[in-house]
Amino acid sequence: MLKIIISGCNGRMGRVIAQLCAADPDLEVAAGFDILGADSGYSFPVCSTPAQFTGTADAVIDFSHPAALDGLLEFAVSRKIPLVLATTGYSPEQLAQIGSAARQVPIFRSANMSLGINVMLELVKKASSVLGNVCDIEIVERHHNKKLDAPSGTALMIADAAAQACPHETNYVYERHSVRQPRDRKEIGISAVRGGTIVGVHEVIFAGHDEIIEIKHTAMSREIFAQGAVEAARFLSGVKKPGLYDMSMLVK
Image 1 (cartoon, one colour):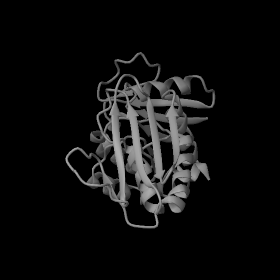
Image 2 (tube, one colour):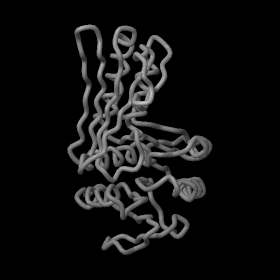
Image 3 (cartoon, one colour):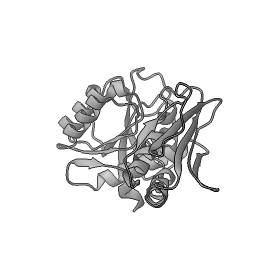
Image 4 (spheres, one colour):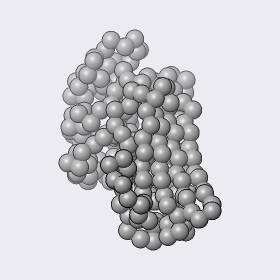
């Protein structure tokens, strides 16, 4: 049985993971971490800080906030418990902290835990390597009106995948209203839409001369991200060496 800790257990994704675990006899929630404390109705203990937890677990799944990173990294390193980081919006300094901690404990980090999105990344790489010189690349992402960061971490993952595979150097353009000039072939446009209860839609457009190729992923519920995070925790439970791991290791 896989014993996990849910960091951010009172949030939207934390509650989905708790429901997923309750329905799977092979999963057990050892505890939850949340700054709001135990006002949640869960059957497992909820700690307001990681330092309060004294039990054991196979992995921590974090869907919380970048502000929680310091405490999580200190907990994971000191207790030698693998960490799945599904939170977005980390600063460059925080990414460096994660890399440093990964030299001491296994850490799995992805801005999107959907297996489908990560298959999409591989398709984008292939398309960019073939079409990068003849097509303009535009990325459009849509999310609910409560999402704080824009563009999404997933949109940036897609842009990075495209840029990595393009035959030429690229630069990202996040808005065009202030620039009155023709589009440069080296640009990768990234647009964000916020509205309603959209879970997540990511579309990559390869616009060429008289033809358009589109690669699109639509998330119908948050459960796909929860399931991917659990699969990442399963993966880490079998990892013996410290290091930084990502979803590419689950889709190949």
